[in-house]
Each structure stands twice: as C-alpha cells, then as structure tokens.
Image (cartoon, rainbow, N blue to C red):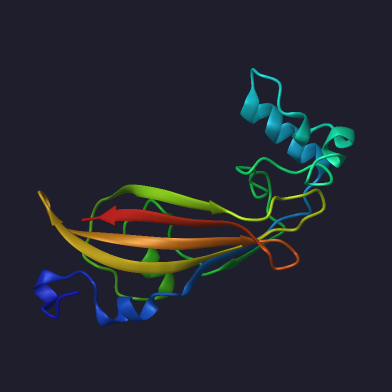
Length: 175
C-alpha cells in the first residue's frame, strides 16, 4: 500500500476495517429431504449417490448416516436468522465500505475475481449452520485500465458444535 493518496484506493479507514463482520446468518436445521432434493438437482439427469438419499446405505459408511453434498447450501431457500451490517446491494461497487460506514474508494466498476473454497466437516441432517462473512483484505495492482482494487471477503460456515464446515474466500476486482 502506497502512502501517496493519489496512487492508492486504500485509505487508513479501509485498512482499519479489515476483519470487520459484513454479514451473519443462521440456517434452519437441515432436513433429510433438503439433502435428497439438493442431490437430485445437482446430479440430474444421473441418479445421485446413495450416500445422499439411502439412510440404510449411508449408515454403513464412514459418515454413519446421510450427509449433504459438499456444495449443499442450507441458506438456499430461507434463513432462520439474518444479521450483520445493512447496506446497499452487492451490485454497488462501493457496497463493502458503505456497509461498514467507511468512505468508499472512487471506483465505478467491479467484476468477480474468483473464489476459493475449503471444505471441512460434512453437513448432516439436524445440523444448524452459521455463516459469518468478514472483510478479508485489500490489495492493489495497476492494469491496462489503471489502478485496480482487489477486495477479499472471507466467509466461514460452522455447525452447531462450532466445527468448520466450509471456508470461502471471494475476490472482487474494482476500478
């Protein structure tokens, strides 16, 4: 990060906001039928693996019962609790800083810079998942269109025991 404000988007207030919570949500308990429907949709037109729908078979596996596919989203239909910072929608290139009450950088455009996912404990019927998203950090790079601001958001899902289920790092490029 440069100290010259003319050559950086990252203000001291933005740097200080790194680690701040952006959103929090809690799922309803995961139902066996949720897992089965997700697996049917994901594997269509093929038949989903028995691990996701046959309780008798799943009980004989290392998981000891039905588990959800790793990409299962317990927030896809409804959310039991929603929290975090209210603010503009994600289509606003200044949304992150506006949500945190920080002066946003003078950017006008944004695009998806990629996503990285790490899976932990599998989700089981009855699990209640909590998702917490935090501002992960900022970095900059000069491209053909000038200075680009790379903003990462770190989202961690944990089950009711506090065990990590999924960790996602998403990057948005703004200019």
